[in-house]
Length: 364
Image (spheres, rainbow, N blue to C red):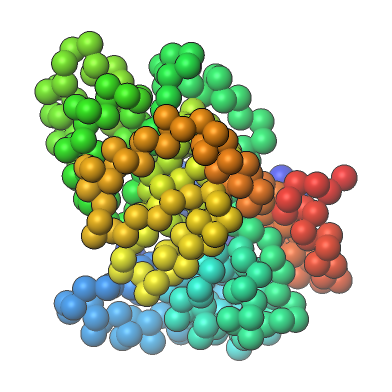
């Protein structure tokens, strides 16, 4: 979103308001965006620990902080992405009369979003059903999920970067930021058989990377090149998605949106501790015919090998790829940017049909 907004309005000054748990402390300043931090943590705890008590206290203490930040910055508009840190910012924006847009990528909105949706002047969502769940039939736009621009990505060049030979079938395993251990264990247990069939790009997370490297060394020398583990991929993730023939991963909104943009079939293992949000995201993709769902507790080496078997069924794979492309909203970032700039520049909001054309990439 920051990249698109800067392209549309080069003189725009961006300020990011975040918390004290998350990746923004490293990624945001590196992107040339000023970072202001609240006392609360970016991600609310799901564990039964001391933070279960401290998080609400931090949330209350962050409200005057958010007021002070918005008073000091005086933004033309606020873009909130529905996370925990959005709550005090949206409350402060409402108190100060600042126009705000709330974007929500999950089919089933979380508690933070449900609690704050009416504070935003405009809501943007990835799925039409979310508007009804938020009670925002008016001023609720279906934009899809903003993702990196993939329209100029060359698949063959991406495959060469990952050294996948012509005709080689590539499996990408990516757990996102949540609970990758289950996926890592399945990959390592299935690895000897898996590399006999496909090339494997495996994003293991930092904690799982040493074990992945050790597993690679245990493979026969002539098969090691077929397994490429990485602790993480940032800008390279676009090429990894372009190079892959099948994705195995969680059901985060961005992961599924990027897979759809590449027409990439997905075997989805929803993260089980997200109040059902990922399950609902996964069911939408499965209903469209673009993915298969495997419950977290059922995902193991045998399930991974069965998933890889999809690459042996070209007709089924092609049908799923076409279904994935039908879900793509490659211009979602431009669609959300149009709404944000309308608020910031005090312009009339665009018509929903115009936003839809931008989102699907069909606008002139």
